[in-house]
Each structure stands twice: as structure tokens, then as C-alpha cells.
Length: 340
Ligand code: KG4
Ligand code: ZN
Image (cartoon, rainbow, N blue to C red; front, side, top):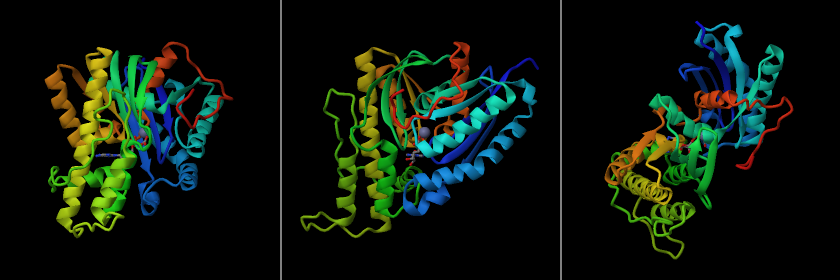
């Protein structure tokens, strides 16, 4: 066919991922090698373990991504890779592999912002242009609200002043003795719990600012599970109590995310909300944001489930960059933080 394809590589955190994406945004392959098993016993991602695991997986993952796409190498128009934000050692593995392939195959290199890619994942499900919009990215490392003018103009409206939403899920799971990653295990336990059982705080709910704070919620669940330092004991941590704590905690996080998103829609006058990132896989969040969208009359576009947690398909965003000639230099560097 006359379609053109790009190979995208993503290694910003603890998933080694490669995807082949056609110029009509159809996904020809989407390979993700998760390192969750390696980090499980630490309750979070250990950077040095992550970069070493990327090193041993990156070539097989790329090879599988190319194989499963069933295209010829000559049909590739570019190589894309995440250059940040993320763990420096992890990012370097993917970006270096991408540079090497770009040099060897004489193809342009395109670098992709991981957070913007999480929002662009919404485009893959919608099958049409999704900009302009307000964007909410909720992941293990970030909780950011954006004014999205186009696929390459994102203005940060506000973010978390301490922990990210996914990080809060991971820490809460650890406190409750539930497995890593915490988001899916809290969500599973919550299904058997009462979300009104424990009255957790809704941090920042009454502030006009588009900021989040989740560290107080983490302390609240710690005290509710293990007892208060002032000596007030907690009820025994029975199976039912764990489910009630999980459900009440999840509801507190969802309430804050829903109310801040609605606030961002009102403040910007935009009529569309994009939701992406690992926490966007949470069913309660998807449902309750959907109900809020109906009440307030805005459109909600959520990233397809398979493109919520880290993957390389969402780097389809690289096509937009290629379209405007944004090709990266082979001596470009990775970025650990949000700033370009
Ligand atoms: O986007 P992602 O895969 O990696 C980062 O860029 O950080 O997000 C990972 C985060 C983890 O904190 C994980 O606990 C959370 O997303 N997560 C969830 C769910 N699935 C994954 N949080 C809540 N509910 C879920 N179903
Ligand atoms: Zn991510």
C-alpha cells in the first residue's frame, strides 16, 4: 500500500514499549513489556532496576513491534521516541535506540513528550481531531490540567503540589497490603467496599486554583488503617475494612479529579475534556467524569483502555510533529522534568 509508517519507542518509566503507527493513525503493532514484577516488592519503581531492564528488553521489543506490524522496513518514514519527562536512565535507553535506528536507516528522528502523548491517546479512540480541549493527565508521575490548543500547543493550567494521583493509589495500596501497581488493586478491592464508610478529605476542593494535593489523603488513609499517632487506635484491618478503605479512598481521589476538571472547563470556556494517563484506566473515574460531563454539557473523550497506561502507540503524536517539520537532532538529550 502507499501508506507510510513510523516506529515509536517509549521507555520513560518502567514499561519497555514499541509500536508501528500508520499515517492515518491506525495502530499496526503495540508491544509493551511490563516490569511490574521486578518492582513489585519495592512498592514502586526503582530507577536503576528500570534502566537495566530496559537495556535487556529494548531490542526484542522493537523487533517484535516491527514483526507484528508486517511491514517492510522501506515503508518506515520516521523513528519516534519519548525524550521526557521521566526517569533519565530509562529515557536514555529508548532515545539512544531510536537515534541509532534513525542514523542506520537514514530516517528522521522525532521526539515526543510523554505527557502530551498521554493526551494524544484520546485521538486514537476518537478517530477524529480532538483539539481544542482541556486535558487532564493522571499518571504515576503527573497530575496535570492543560489548555490544549492543538496537537502541539499545550498550556499547563495547574498540577499537583505534592504526590501524583497514581502515586497516591500506589502508596495507599502499600498501606493496605495490596499488590503493586496500586491503582488496579485498589480499584478491585473498592468494588467490594462502601465508598461512604470513611470520610476522607477532598484536598483543594474549595480552592479556585487548578491545583491538586494528594499527600494529605495518603496520611489520612495511613491513620485510618494503622491508627493515629495521638494514640487513637484504628479498627482491625479485616478484609471488609480494607475494601471499605479502598472504596472511600478511591472516591475521594475521583471527587477531586472530577471537580477540578469541571472547574477547568468553566474557567477556560472549552467544551471538551480529554482524559489520559494510567489512572484514566480507573472505571469509577471514567464513569463519574462521564456523569459530570452530562450534567455540565461538555464532551468527554477518554483514552481507550489499552492506551491509558504507558505504551508507544500514543506516540502517534509524532505524525503531527513530522507534519510541521519538527525533526529532532541526533545529539538531542533526554529531559527528566516538564520543562522543554
Ligand atoms: O501512565 P502510567 O502507566 O505511567 C506513568 O507515566 O506514570 O501510570 C501508572 C499509574 C500507576 O500509579 C498505577 O497505579 C495507575 O497508573 N493506575 C491506576 C489504574 N491502572 C493504573 N490507577 C487507578 N485505577 C486504575 N485502574
Ligand atoms: Zn505515563
